[in-house]
Structures are given as structure tokens and as C-alpha cells.
Length: 215
Image (cartoon, rainbow, N blue to C red; front, side, top):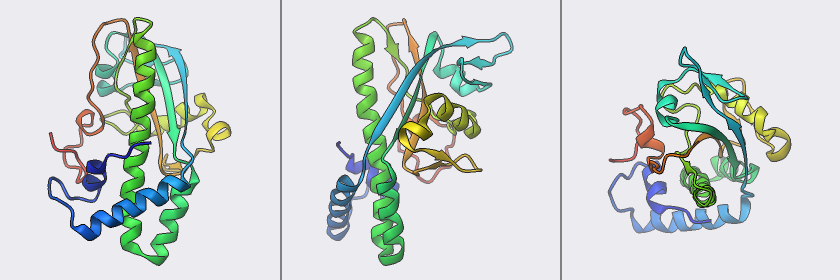
């Protein structure tokens, strides 16, 4: 599983600045320790998609009104529900260093965030190749919390994936997932021969986020 170092630095707030030698060494050490501790898993299921007359997105197992998700799913006839996690190992390491070495905990948090995104990118790239072999094209994954796609939809996506039983993902009362380094997303499936590679920050309307990726 490859980890994008630039993403780790972005989460650490470096922007385009070069990290200092001690920070570079700490990043390498954290990535190595995390790689030995995580247990990445993913699930996906495909459902029929309908856009109702009132603008409601009907993904068979969930219904929601969201302009940003509607744009993402334009010309799609199916959706893939996607879920992934690094497992509890990453959380245990972060909790451990929160007590022992705060600087390492901060870098560990950033490295784990980059690691789950890198894992999801790798899995989705493989899925894209399979679907394109069948003449179908995937939209970029779109997660609850992006734009106006409400975070509370996490519950319906996790239930449909049986993520609690199959991957050990639980949901808090505030709709946050545990293990924390977990992802749910909707991926549109279309017969239109084009796809958009926009991911993450570029798909999100929160331009004031301190972790936002530079254009």
C-alpha cells in the first residue's frame, strides 16, 4: 500500500514547504510502524439509481437530497456503495502516542489519514479498470460530509454494506466512524464514456478548510 508523502505533509500543514530533516525521519518511522499495525479492508455493493421528480436521489438503500451529489451522479444509472477501513490498529497507535509522544501522535494521525486515502484510491483504480472492461465508467467516490451530502447518511451506507459485521465499523451518535480511519462513499456508474478524476478537496465546497489541497 503506497502512501503519498505530499498528502501527509498537507495534513501536517506544510503546504508547498519542504519538511525539515527531523520531520522527514519521523514521517518515515510513523509510516513504517503504521504499515505493520493496520489491517486494511474494503467492501462494495452495487444498487440501481433513480433521480425522483422532486430531486431526491434514490440509491435503493438510501434516499437523500443533495445538489453536489446530484452533479456527481449525472448520467449514472447505478451506484456503488463503498466502504474501507484501516482497522483498529491505527487508532491504538495514535492513542498510545497521545500519551507518550505528542509530536509522534500528530504525524501518526496525518500518516494514517493519507494511508486510508491511498488505500481507497488503489482499490477504486482497480474497480475502474474492471468496469471499463465492461463498457462502464465510474465517477469519483463521493462521501457523506462532502458538499451538502449529509453526514447522517453514513448510517444507511454502513447498514447496506453490513460494515459493522464484516469490517467492524461502528457509528457514534455524531455520525463519526470507529475505527476513525474509515471511509464510506457513493460511486456513480455510467455508460457515458467519460469520467472525472476530481477527488476529495476539489469535490468539496468547504473552501475554508485548513487542510484543503491547493488547486
